[in-house]
Structures are given as structure tokens and as C-alpha cells.
Image (cartoon, rainbow, N blue to C red; front, side, top):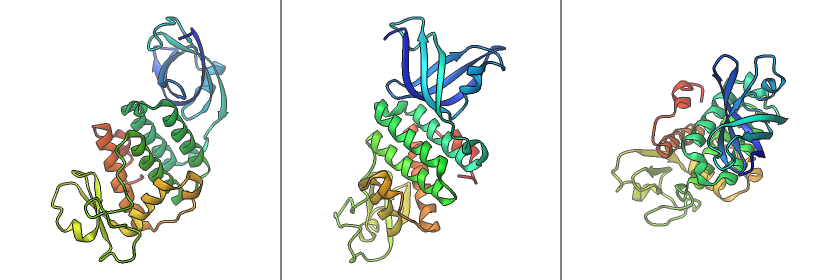
Length: 259
């Protein structure tokens, strides 16, 4: 690894380090999360640029060229996108924090570039979203993140009988997600599923997940979903996120009632 390193990055957090310096966590395109020291006082021009949720080109300097995990400093940051609405909208702030916390705790799924593209697209979309668009955007991001982790279940058909959830011959409207089986079950097969951590979803909700899995972000963004189905989806993807992280997520705890 060269001493000087340039990459696309998003600022995830900025924490005080001593009296004048800061420890900054970046999500980068090639190396996942990078922790770097930002030197300088409150009047430093660079400090004003390295602000949470800003995205752009980061210039790092590493004292030990063969060890990029230590002694990294941020030497410059060319901001391309400021995501200013995150500072003004409480929901957007918590949604971005949840995404960042999940990414950090799951180590970017081990797929740095794919994680970067998914997160960058989510933040840019969240910046221009309004109202329930923000909630749907968060659901889509978390569901796609499960795919990156390799644990996204097939939402197109029953995990037991393989009956399509898009078929018109389903009896009832209650699809069940079983965390034990990591699968969705049609109403008939769900009656035989008696496991813990079961989530009831309407056909509308599960079809929405299937659309997100199959379609491009641009196409799935146009799909509407009722408030009831959206609530079901949020409960499911929040549960899956904490399962993936292996711990409770602070963003969900502090954002309860907002997210």
C-alpha cells in the first residue's frame, strides 16, 4: 500500500481525539471502513470539510506503507456531495446512522466496492427523498444489504411448497417469515410452521421485497406500498439487521418511535 492513497469516501463519524484533533471513520470504495486522524483546531479549513455524511474524494497519508490499519491521517478531502438534509431531517439522520452502524458492525460484508455502491446510492437517494419515500428507501437498502451478506431469503415463493406469492390462487393473505428457516411460507404451509421469531406479512409486503430483489433501484423506487405493509417490512428488516450484526443496534434503540 503506497503512503499516499486517494479514494472515494463518505464520512461516517467524527470524534474528538485530544484537545485539537479528531478520529474520523470513513467508508471507502476500495478498503471499506478506514479510521484516520484529522489534525487541526476548530478553525481548520479541512475540519469544516470533514463533516459527517459529506462524500467525496479523500486523500490519506499512511506513515507505515505496509500497515494501512495504523497511523493514517487525512491530508485533504474534496467534497462532492454534502447531504445537508440529513442535518435538518431527524428521520434521515437516524436512517443514515443505522446504515453506517450496520456497515461498520458487519465489516462492509467483505465486499468493499459493492458495499460502497449500495451505501452511496442510498445516501444520495435519501438526500432527495421526501416523507414516506425515506422509509421505503431504508427498507430497500436494508433488504439489499441482506443480499450482500448472503442471507437474503427468496421472497418470490414459499420455502416449503414453492408456490409463487404472485399467483392468484393463494388462500388467505398472511405470509409468514420464519427466522429459524430463513424463509417465507404461504398461508397453508405457515400453519405447520411453529417456530420462534415469526413475522406475519401481507402479500403486498412480500411482493414488495420480491420486486426490490428483482428490479433495478430505479425501477423499484417507483413502487408504492401501504402504510400497513410498510410497518410490516420495517419490523422485518430491522430484526434481520440486528441478526446480521449479532447485537442490538444503537441506532434502532435511540431512534425508536422515529424510524
